[in-house]
Amino acid sequence: MSGHVFHPGHEELHGVTVVVGSGDGKTYVGRYHERNARGVVMRDVAIHDPGVATLGLEEWLARQRKFGVQVAQRVVVVAGDQVGPIRRLIEQ
Figure 1 (cartoon, rainbow, N blue to C red):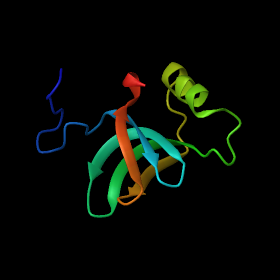
Figure 2 (figure 1 turned 90 degrees about the vertical axis):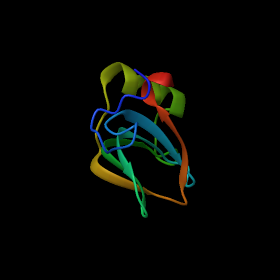
Figure 3 (figure 1 turned 120 degrees about the horizontal axis):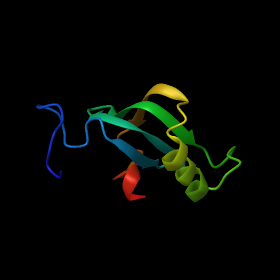
Figure 4 (figure 1 turned 45 degrees about the horizontal axis):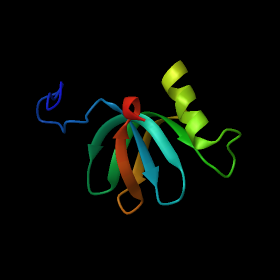
């Protein structure tokens, strides 16, 4: 349901599993918590780092969708000046 906010007082994406690209080339998949002065706060996050990854980004995203998010960090803050597009994982 578009426009529905699960927790009133939060942004529409709060609690939704999203994909966030960053300026350093990493891609993050996790639950969107909020955007604040520091950047985008995410919870239960998987991280694709092209410098060390054994899978390409598209294959990695497909695995995250199929098998669930492989949590690498409980909380990540993607710095505001590094945040790329934010998309829902199910729309990838």
